Length: 74
Image (cartoon, rainbow, N blue to C red; front, side, top):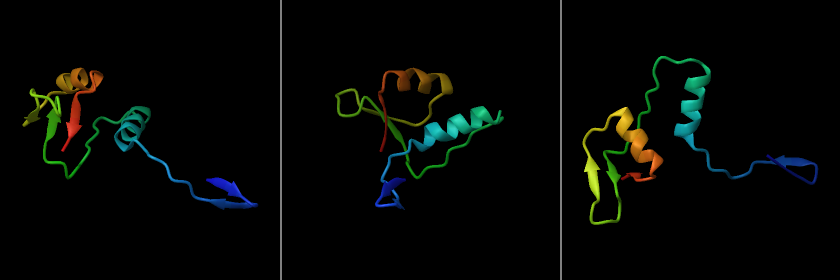
Protein backbone atom coordinates (compact mmCIF):
# COMPACT_ATOMS: atom_id res chain seq x y z
CA UNK A 1 0.00 0.00 0.00
CA UNK A 2 1.14 3.49 -0.80
CA UNK A 3 -0.10 6.61 0.92
CA UNK A 4 -1.12 9.28 -1.57
CA UNK A 5 -2.65 12.52 -0.34
CA UNK A 6 -3.97 10.91 2.86
CA UNK A 7 -5.47 7.97 0.93
CA UNK A 8 -4.14 4.46 0.52
CA UNK A 9 -3.62 3.06 -2.96
CA UNK A 10 -2.61 -0.49 -3.96
CA UNK A 11 0.87 -0.97 -5.36
CA UNK A 12 2.02 -3.45 -7.98
CA UNK A 13 4.37 -6.13 -6.69
CA UNK A 14 5.81 -9.47 -7.69
CA UNK A 15 5.20 -12.20 -5.13
CA UNK A 16 7.24 -15.39 -5.34
CA UNK A 17 4.27 -17.62 -4.59
CA UNK A 18 6.17 -20.93 -4.48
CA UNK A 19 8.69 -19.51 -2.02
CA UNK A 20 5.90 -18.01 0.11
CA UNK A 21 4.04 -21.35 0.10
CA UNK A 22 7.23 -23.15 1.12
CA UNK A 23 7.86 -20.73 3.98
CA UNK A 24 4.24 -21.09 5.13
CA UNK A 25 4.53 -24.89 5.08
CA UNK A 26 7.79 -24.66 7.01
CA UNK A 27 6.40 -22.30 9.65
CA UNK A 28 3.26 -24.40 10.17
CA UNK A 29 5.20 -27.69 10.31
CA UNK A 30 3.19 -29.05 7.37
CA UNK A 31 3.75 -32.71 6.54
CA UNK A 32 3.45 -32.06 2.80
CA UNK A 33 3.41 -29.17 0.36
CA UNK A 34 1.72 -29.72 -2.98
CA UNK A 35 1.95 -27.02 -5.65
CA UNK A 36 -0.45 -27.39 -8.57
CA UNK A 37 0.41 -25.67 -11.84
CA UNK A 38 -0.67 -25.61 -15.45
CA UNK A 39 2.96 -25.92 -16.58
CA UNK A 40 3.36 -29.21 -18.45
CA UNK A 41 7.12 -29.64 -18.11
CA UNK A 42 10.21 -27.97 -16.74
CA UNK A 43 13.26 -27.29 -18.89
CA UNK A 44 16.86 -27.31 -17.77
CA UNK A 45 19.70 -25.45 -19.48
CA UNK A 46 17.10 -23.40 -21.39
CA UNK A 47 18.39 -21.63 -24.47
CA UNK A 48 21.54 -23.74 -24.72
CA UNK A 49 22.47 -26.75 -26.82
CA UNK A 50 21.94 -28.82 -23.62
CA UNK A 51 18.28 -27.75 -23.21
CA UNK A 52 16.13 -30.63 -21.97
CA UNK A 53 12.53 -31.15 -20.81
CA UNK A 54 12.21 -33.16 -17.62
CA UNK A 55 9.65 -35.93 -17.26
CA UNK A 56 10.46 -36.45 -13.57
CA UNK A 57 12.83 -35.00 -11.00
CA UNK A 58 13.63 -35.91 -7.42
CA UNK A 59 13.64 -33.42 -4.56
CA UNK A 60 17.43 -33.71 -4.34
CA UNK A 61 17.80 -33.22 -8.08
CA UNK A 62 15.61 -30.12 -8.07
CA UNK A 63 17.58 -28.66 -5.14
CA UNK A 64 20.85 -29.14 -7.03
CA UNK A 65 19.46 -27.57 -10.21
CA UNK A 66 17.69 -24.72 -8.40
CA UNK A 67 20.94 -23.82 -6.65
CA UNK A 68 22.55 -23.40 -10.09
CA UNK A 69 19.49 -21.51 -11.43
CA UNK A 70 19.10 -23.91 -14.36
CA UNK A 71 15.39 -24.75 -13.89
CA UNK A 72 12.84 -23.01 -16.10
CA UNK A 73 9.12 -23.64 -16.52
CA UNK A 74 7.67 -23.73 -20.03
